[in-house]
Length: 122
Image 1 (cartoon, helix red, strand yellow):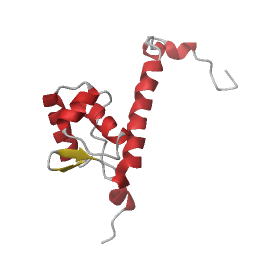
Image 2 (tube, one colour):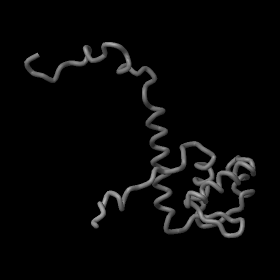
Image 3 (cartoon, one colour):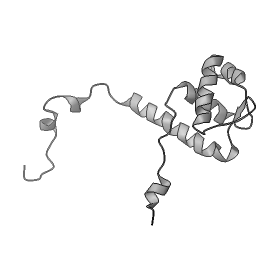
Image 4 (cartoon, helix red, strand yellow):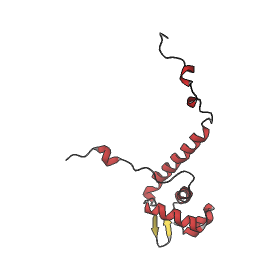
């Protein structure tokens, strides 16, 4: 039976939330992708405590975003660009929401009456 290309190429949502501990650890590993690091080293470089770093790294590993050999975590070289772009997208989304006005005029009652009509007969 044929399978829809959409089903074959459907991306899972990116499991890392902006500004989360996982995001901090992943950003560090992507930035320093030439090396592998222990949780203690990652904690020291990211201002996370060791327990938090261990938890974040475990989740990243479970989600198959990073690899582990013994107690050293690293990014596969073939995944660096993809993960870098994903993290840049997260950062862009955060900046976009930070730049939006706090006064949501569209949420105010009657906003649609203030918008000019696109109908040339009105």
